[in-house]
Image (tube, rainbow, N blue to C red; front, side, top):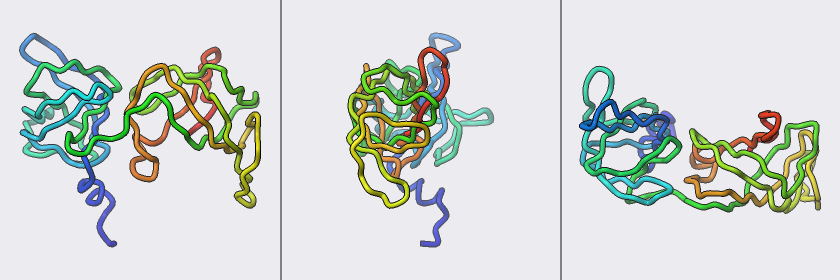
Length: 200
């Protein structure tokens, strides 16, 4: 198709990771972020993930004026019709087409640290604006980058790619990377050094 990428992404279900909660007074509560996919209009029914609470969009606020529609790539502030508890890192999505929410999943990761990956060790996982505790519980296999063979592995070394099971201390909203890079890609961070040790 010759359609520009942003046009295609605008036709997909709406997704906006919350980067900031704005509450200057008791009369206003806005949720700021950049739409990574889809579009929102006032009156659209939305769901907040991972809590699965529902509401409708009251206003789409920008620095200049309210918008009649926000599309992929727009940095906006949403206000909702209901008092909903929303925090930085939550994701506001189309209620008709929500994305996955789970505290366990399988992922491809590339290991980027001199020290090897140790299954069972705790890391931080950062996806969008959310950071959670994570443990790689199992390495299912590593992938030979020369011929794509799947190889048995107990650990991953620098620049090796593996498919791993990951367990989190709380549920997050996510999608397959092929569908949505913003909600499908993450990094693992070493808790002691604060260094990025893997991308997934």
